[in-house]
Length: 102
Length: 222
Image 1 (cartoon, rainbow over the protein chains, first blue to last red):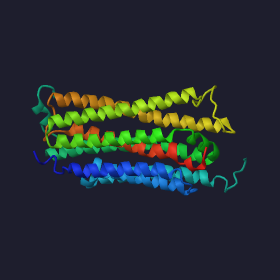
Image 2: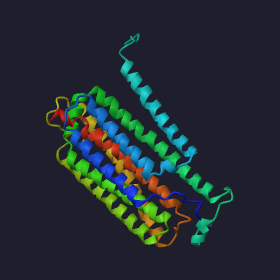
Image 3: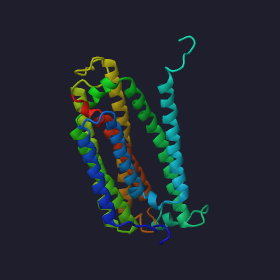
């Protein structure tokens, strides 16, 4: 019986996480109208990442999950990183080297 | 095979040693699926990033034409649904059948509300001729082509996200029916847990879509 659900978080915990998520949504919307130059992207993505971590750690129970599960998640994000990093690396450096015939 | 009784679903399948191991296998399987979904949406986010670097001016104008207040309101609706979903999972963990059903119904309503707002927004795009195609016209944009790329990505990403929401709503309906038939207990609530993971994942996708599509170039003005 108890083996399956060892970790039951309190409703208060969930509600506090929920309030934090709503606050971050309000903040990210408000800060979008402030001119931060190139940093507006950085701030928006930083807030989105915080919200993702809150949802994953608390709502998706990642903080109670097994090591194997965490390895799978980090592995998945690693592949996403490879996809983004190599593609953007390609687009960012295309003009740097002359290509014969172009 | 597993059709007659609730006790049947509790049965430990022969390939597992313990119930906990059986549950872990289900959770792991769901996470593997979610990882494939991350790569799936990741390609679209990447396409968005590349095109935004190529056509920053058009993307800024097109992005600012969206209604950020409606977008933020929809984000709040979706976060509320994630909260009710996690409360449903908690109710299932504690074996509270009635609370489980009510939280699932609330989640379903909030999910449907999100889709309703999304439909309203899309309808607005059709009326304003912001749908890529022969009649496309975006005011203030010098080059209409790149602006159409923005809206193509907008419809592809929000459309795919909405499709996931529709699937989620179907899964919630399934959970509500099963919960009403007393299929879940504190000892067995794996489907609630797994579909909860899916629902939160779809929420996370929107958490990134909202700032990228609606907010990033807002400060540049109209």
